[in-house]
Image 1 (cartoon, helix red, strand yellow):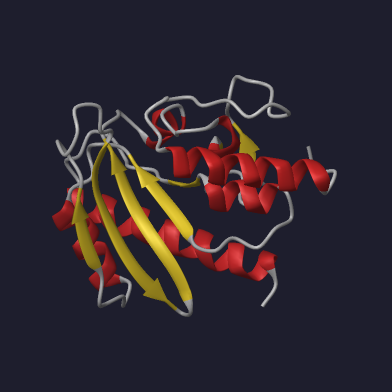
Image 2 (tube, rainbow, N blue to C red; image 1 turned 90 degrees about the vertical axis):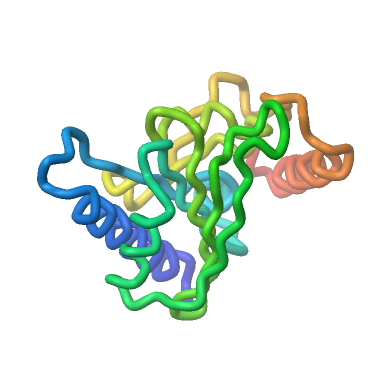
Length: 179
């Protein structure tokens, strides 16, 4: 399956989640919820690489019950829930729901921010500050404020192993002439 086909499927999953979550919020909800495909998957799409999985990011207004409702409505079963909130003082993720659908792995991440776009600012490295939305379906957008040709730690709370992994990814992209 091509990256384009995989991306189209991931966008369809994103739209299905958005639609069902908004339905679960009800007609009286003042604001609609929008999510993003973000982080490493969006970066990989940007550079023409195959994403290993798809991260779908929402802001704090999305609840676990809304996500579970949406998954059921979209015919998805067998998900796992991982709570993160308050595990460390500066944790920005409230919860993560992992599932597989039609051969693809997804992580739905709810960040403790107003909306999904604000979450991108909190990613650990500038190399991950990419997103794809329902409005940018055909391409990925770099949302960072630093020059992507240099790897920059945004948060500074990453492990040495994570730093080494990101440096290796950055070096690989540079060697391939993508940066």
